[in-house]
Image (cartoon, rainbow, N blue to C red):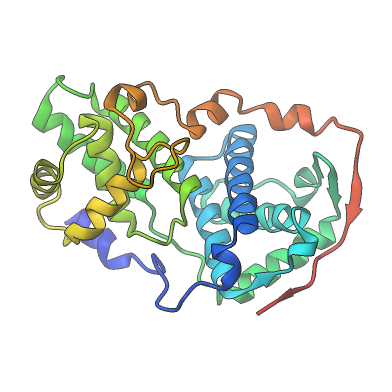
Length: 284
């Protein structure tokens, strides 16, 4: 079926090799969070699809696994990389991708089109030109339809509302951890169930996963770990803390806040404080 076809195409969802040391450093995690937020803001500004934004984040994470960027050139190097990733994702997924000149003016930075273009080529070569991707958003229509059939107009709302909540959860999770840590099918199924039922204990979660996606081979440990991470309260110091269903039900995730202010980038582009920068030194 359709879901089995998608699962068979999943690739690069995790790395067999340990991440570079910078991926576990606090400064890199902070830079990555800022990058994800910027990508979501830019998605709103240009009107890109959710899938395009997720693909851009995946490009950033895949690049970060293969190359290290000197801390001394942060945060502007991360921004240049983010622009290249968004531009490439738009070229892959959108009907009409913005010209590089539309990405130039950005807060404190004014990157030349040549610098953006060269960073795009560096991303392409680093990722071996493998730019196709399966994302959780490819699964949402089918999974939300199944939930609607199972639940009717009951808990969690209609399929459309569930998909909106699931999208917020997916991007909240993408901000918290690399999108390569879990299979897109796992992320999508977990997001749909979290959007529908809120916090569940392990046994009912596994039961609902089996009924929602009986033909997809989802690892139970991965499902529970992803579910715990997705419902974790980012303000809590505890790694096992979860938000309640009511906390998450109003979609108060970073994604929801950014989506509501989707045109804030346009205002930022009017900022006169600019610094012209060139391509940073990046090494393996």
